[in-house]
Image (cartoon, rainbow, N blue to C red; front, top):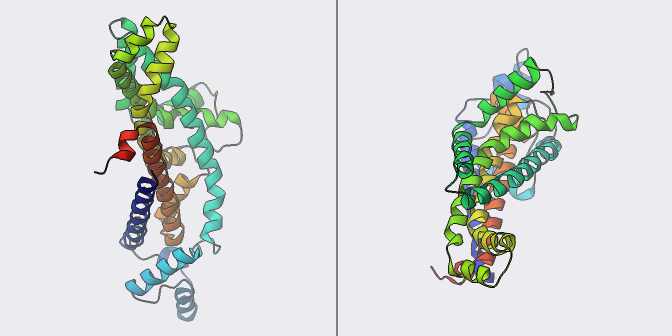
Length: 308
């Protein structure tokens, strides 16, 4: 198991290095930040001083080497616009993003696991058909469509829920539903399929033959064995949600998180903030995937014992 964990961590480090490099060169392709960041009305002397201050006077490779050295040293530079460390700017946004991600994940687990189990148990009745129909519809509708629809209905038409910010528990309702909608649909489908795979297994018949209650058979023996597949899918879905889902939803609801910050910094070409924000999201995604792989190996001994 130790070798498997070390191999996973090595792949994680290599992936992060590639992402860090791609982020640097991709941000440079969007154009020069000088006009946006430095503005108009500066003298040539002041402009030269600002270019040297932000380290934009060297070649692309010199900037890349300086950038990598800063990443290793934990110095990610200053924001072109706010003139303060980008680590402080991003740190202020991590909390709200994690709160929204946690609420979306909690809602997903509370809704999708019971629906998936019910869809498997009642697969030949209208209950199972209705659940799967809702799951297919939810999977097909993007989260920004759900967000816009809820804003039009609950905010503008009925005036029931606030739209902007995160000042109260009511502010969490619409962003949480918008972020978790597609995830609920996907996890419900995978939970149903995983349960169908185990319901007909011999150990399930043995458990029923022992006289165990049906709830114990389904939840303890069935769902526990199906959790290996569910865990893998859940990790991938969380990673995708952290990488892309929060960006759109936070921008729509003006949620003060990393997603909204990334959109603003990309528009304004604030390279240091954009780079560090993307790296932060990448670290979260890669860490979630690595943790999922390790948890998957613990849940299924065949993974960690395989030499492939």
